[in-house]
Length: 403
Image (cartoon, rainbow, N blue to C red; front, top):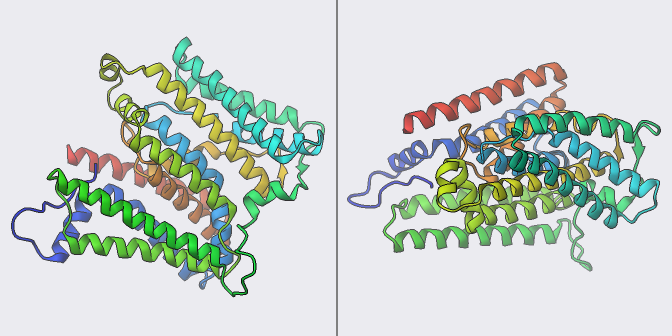
């Protein structure tokens, strides 16, 4: 739960309160600060190219599959497990989708449903090994990494890279939502309306949460700080929306990731299942003694992870407009890094899918910005490794100080 500045007694200065608020919630704010710093740095170093509408759209499309994987991985890590197979599960599922559409003549929507079902079955298989057979998740998913890498290579052995000419399928990671018909405007009006709706919903949600805290005498921030936070977040959202609306509008990738995020955020924060996941991650033995079926919840998390890996494979294949033998290489590392950079505790029990999305954009912003600068890929890996270890070390140190 977010720590807040006490609302009792005389109010301190506004600046001092903001500083105290940041200090109290430094783990949650650090990733946002890091993302802003990274974006400002690359905007400066690329002469403004990084922040241009075309590149922002490209960044969203690039980050889509990592963001989807990071959402599923966050659940796994909260439960103190790990899934190393997701990269090649995504690559294999993307190849299956390409084969279904190009060689079997299957409709793109049927192919997507089939591939998602394949992902669900893979998660069921691995989850049962972990929960029923008792094979550790590390071993199960490491074996899965080898298996699905082999299956990916076998699937594409005869054809090599498969080009996907299906325009509707490829639009999932390259297309944009259509604008309202009949309008003649230099801006994408529907994107602007979606941005405004998102801001209104965000404000309404935050106001409602604040009222509930006050109702039950919980500590809250002062009204000026609360309003400043709403204005700042609203300004960031509308700035990005404005830039996108000046180009081609909101990418379909953003819509897909947004829907997945809303579903999982609601599940974790508003449902009994979400409370069970956090409870098991905090103390699985105590959770089991309290009547929670730990095995079923864990099985759900693995099924969910592989389902999202299949979706990530679809997005990646649509992005490249092809299925390649190298698809999936390193995806699991980006997903794990995104979750930890987003504040998921190394010890389990703590994590937010919304923060995992920010972590994914930190990782992909680094990649995108360094590509624009022409940085050698070897140095890119070194930089990402440094950022990752700093983020985890910072998280560990701040949590130990909090205790």
